Amino acid sequence: FASKSFPNGGSRPAIVPSTIPLLSHTWTFVLGGSKMAAAFLQTSMTDGAIRFKGIGFDMTVLSGPKLIRKALISPQDLHMNIISANAMGNLFGAPKALCDAIITDNSGNAAKPIPGTQVPLGRRFARNQGIFFKEAFAKRSLDEIIPRFTRNLYDQCELLHVGTDWVEMDNLFDFVHCLVFPSAVKSFFGDTMLQVNPNLLPDFRAFEDQLPFLAMGLPVWMKPQAQRARTKCLDAMKRWRQEATKTEEPLVSSDQLWDSAWGLGAIRRFRYLFKDTDGIFGEDAWAATDLAYVWAFTSNVIPASFWYLFETVSRDSLLQSAKEQVSTSKTSAGILQAGELAKNPLLQSIYAETLRLHTASLLTRTSKRDHKIDSWIIPKDQYVMVATQVEHRSPYWNTVDPETGSRHSPYSFYPERFLTKDEDGNVEFSMEGKQGRWLPYGMGEHMCPGRHFAKYEMLLVFAVIVDVFDIELMTPTGWKPEDDMSRYGLGATRPKQEVKFRIRQRASSL
Ligand code: HEM
Image (cartoon, rainbow, N blue to C red):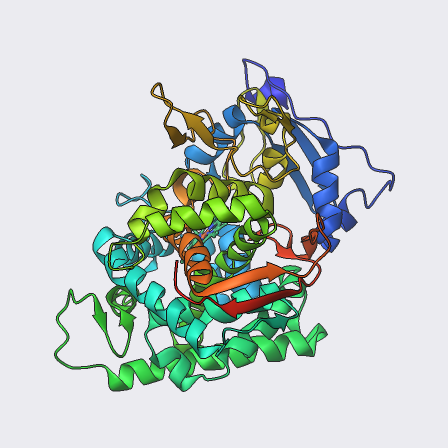
C-alpha cells in the first residue's frame, strides 16, 4: 500500500496489541468511558502515532505538537462531518435529514467554499455555525453577555438565601450547577427560556446523565429513560422557540444586540442563515440545534468551574492569594471587572491548570483521501484522533519550580504552572511553547468558538462565589474526588464523588 500510493515511502502506525483475537479493541470503544481513557493513557505514545483496530474501525491516534498541528490545522485531508452528524443525531436527537445533510456538506467552514464543492449557502452547516459563533462572541456581543452573566450569578447567589451562619451542603458540584446553569441560559436565551420551562434545570440534568448511553449510538428505545429525558428537553426547546417567535417585538432593529423575546441578537438572527434548506430546518431540527447549544453553553463550563473552585478552596494559602487577586480586580465602587480578572496572572494560571488537569476530549476526524501526516500513512475513510488527556499528561508537563526546585508531575494540580517572571521580576501568565501541548479547546478550524467566553465564565463563577460567600470544604485534608471518566471524550470531567462543604454569607464583600 505504502510503496504503491506514496513514492517517497511512509508507513502505517503500529497497532496496539490486544488480547482478544477477533474483537480486538471493539469493546474498549463500545464501552468507552474509563476503559477507553485507560487504553489511551497506557499506550503512552508520546510524540508518535499508534492504531486501535476493531470491528468496523481502524483508528490512528496522534500525539505530540508536530503531528497534532499537521492534522488539525489543515482541513484539506480530514473532516469532522461524520462526528458532528453523529453528535447531533445520537446526543441531541436531530432528524436523519439534518444529519445526512451535515455529512454531505463538504464545503468547509471558511467564507470561501472548498474548491470544487457546490453546497447551497443555506446548507453550509459548518460555515453558518461559524458565522453564528463569530457574531455571538464578538466583542460587542461579549460586552452584552458578560455583565448579564455576572448579574445573573449574583442574583442566583441571593436566591439561595444563605445567611451569615454556616450552612452545610452535600454536593459542591450541584451547588455550582445550580448557580451557573440558569445564569448562562438567561445570558444567551433571555428570561423566556426558563419562564416557559421552569423545570429545565432538573430536566437538563436528567438528560446530561443519559449522555454516556446516548453517545454509544444505540437505538434510543433500548433505554426508555434516556429517550424520555431527551424528549422532555427537546419539547422545552420547542416551547421556547414558539414563545420567542410569538412574542418577538416587531420593531427590533436588524442588528440589535439583545431583545426580550430571543435574548442575544445573534440567536434571533441565526434562523435566517438556514432559510434555504428545503425544509430540513423544521421544528425538530431547531429543537435539536437549540438543545445542542444549551449543552455547549453550559456542560463544559459547569464542571470546569467546579474544579476551579475545588482546587483553590482546598488549598488555604492559594485561596487567600486568589481572593486578594479578585479584590484587586474590583473598581473603587466594589464592582467586579471581568476584564481585570481575565488579565490576572494567578487567576489565569489556575484556570489553565484546571483545564489541563480536568478535561478529556477526543478530537476526532475522518480522512477524506489517502494521505500522509508526516511519514504516517492515513488511508481514506479512517478515523484520526487526538486524546487531549494523553497530551495533558505527557512528560512535557513535569515542571520544576524555579524558585524552590520542587517537582510537579503532570498528574498533580500545580496552580503556578503557567506563571513566569519577566526581566524585572514581575509575575506573568505565559503560554509560551505550549501550542499543541495545551489543548482543552482543541486546535485549528474546529477549535472551540466559545473559549473566550468560557474563560470569563470560569473566572466569574469563582470570583462571585468568593465575593459573596465564605466557603469551606468538609472533606479530609488532602482528599480529592476522582475525575469521572464515564463521559470520556466530551470535554471537562465531572467529579466522581460528592464533595461536602459549608458556606455562609460574608459579612462584607471582598
Ligand atoms: C471549559 C469550557 C469548554 C471546553 C473545555 C470546550 C471544549 C471544546 C473542544 C475540545 C472543542 C473542539 C472539538 C474538536 O475539535 O473536535 C470544542 C468545540 C466546540 N465548542 Fe467548546 N468547550 C467549552 C466551552 C464552550 C462554550 C461556552 C461554547 C459556547 C457555545 C462552546 C461551543 C463549542 C462549539 C459550537 C464547538 C464546535 C466547533 C466546530 O465544530 O467547529 N464550547 N469545544
